[in-house]
Length: 224
Image (cartoon, rainbow, N blue to C red; front, top):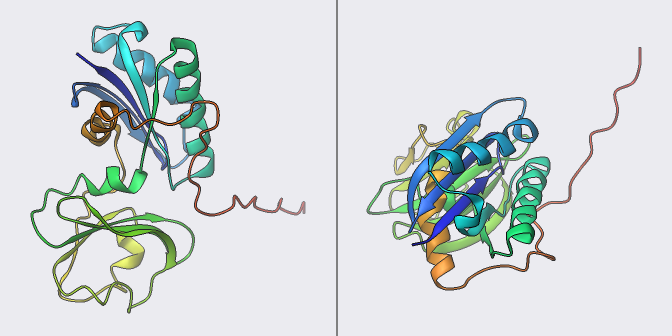
């Protein structure tokens, strides 16, 4: 019996779940504009462990979203995951954020393209087939009317980019699953368990999130 704690903080959705043998049994999450991860994450961790009726000593591993996504959000999630793994001497599992997002699309054909908002018309995206096999690696790209035009089968878009991308991506075979906006720790459960069974883990000491792009600090506003 394997209990895995899943942590997803790559977007504005602060999400934590406990999974038993790959099935989610408890999940706590909240998506807020203010990115309340620093305040909510450790509370959610304590709550899901308590509601699952286990203790931290029962955890077989901790899985964390590896990005791409919010620099600050990823740092908070990875720091918490590393701390638990160090303290408990258990393995750390890194999960592709866009795979977690794509796995929420319940489709049997076509392509699944998860997109996370970057800035302006730029997104982080990846292309999967309906079996969740990678068909094009992660890219940071500017969306134009020609984006993904090479795909003739049905293309399902998921993520928080519908509002800005839907007016541009208008081909008849493009479908926006607008109800799927954020990656969730509940959707990490099967992915992390599969990785755990294969001993597909990362080095707790040296693992770093996959930011995809360098962090850019906004310039301070000028005082009036």
